[in-house]
Length: 579
Image 1: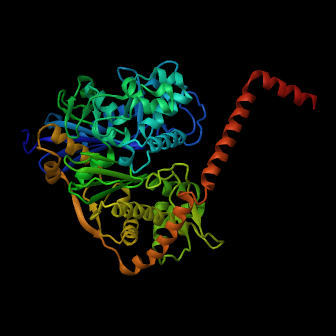
Image 2 (image 1 turned 45 degrees about the vertical axis):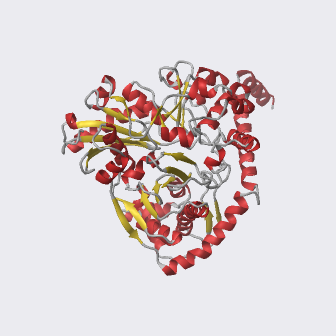
């Protein structure tokens, strides 16, 4: 076993806006150096970078070359920051946002890199928060319920528009020529490992949670044919690939990838993984009942259990999906930090920005300070945290955000606090759903960037009436990937052993306060009533408004295209001259 005290591994976390690498010591998990690279193209949700072509609502794309730049820039930067000899590195592990899909040729070349496809939106990476496949997801859910498909209960009775099959079906029906050219439909978590090793291995985590792979089977060809006859062979033609277990060695680092990263050729590359799931062992959560909430732009909740239950609206229950020998459950909220960022960027008056600048604070810090001075309920507001739709437990990305109770005396800090509280109510809804279904949550551990806001953490403790533990690393996913790299390299026998040696957690850092707990009970009752009224069919206005918005945008796009037509432009000029 490669258990030398000075052996090192590298973990790489691919997030929504950037990728970060961390150099970690195998024997104790010490993080020695970090490098970060912000994606050049970021999230593409308005126009294509190559052509300026406008995108419809609810699209979210990325450029795969940005992911390779993380290898070229962030990994060498992490090694330099650590000041270590790269020859000491024995393995590399990666994690990715999910479900993020790359359409490629048979050799892994992304279609958007090919001549003739740069102007086609469906040829790009579809990021996890691409929600434009909701109509396809609705049809998949309806058909699966009608047929009594045995895999549907494993996903709480609903699959998401974010997942592999819905996104692929959307491509088939909206861009059949791109679908025909797609020879491999690849999770980004697997694509990056393919580029690192030259070997395409499909990771068990993504396949189980996002690809509806249960009991060694995908949905059948006859099910897919009922959705669309041309979709019947999707699994065999574009998706199916050998499944790699978490912590296994996918292959050795290729000469090309070694040149990119500065790491030794041939070192172990771990099977890919999902950012949230890889974080659980980094936070020491490898036993039943320990839930980890990875809080960033969105929140993903992962939990291991020794029992299999149907939990309404969860994102999947997968055997060994987090830790070998336990059922791994996933749930989540599509918008958390994204909602706070949207509010600060688009809704907060300039005077607040100026005040924050004068005091050397961020606007978030200023609003948090002002909100923290209030009593629970003082703002008179209740909000629904659905600005990016609802992932759990409703699994409906046609839903939208809501703030109720605003008056002429409402101030920005009031709304900001109500949005913070709404995300805590959303997490409580998820935890209560698990508990009611017979999957108890005994501990909540927080990871991710939002753990740096103590006020937000205290709100969560009070709303949930649970003590909150906190991961002992600021780079949870990257540390988790490094931990898996250590297992792949043979430095630890399995994930549990690696978690014990390399994981880090601070227990019960935030404790619920009885007076605030009681006050939040009343507000949570109001949240729950709104949640069910707008989310469970009491009032369909949110979906109707989405349809109105889409129709208006499509109408404007058609009008713009008509004006760009030379013949129509000439006719318009003649009309103007006649006036």
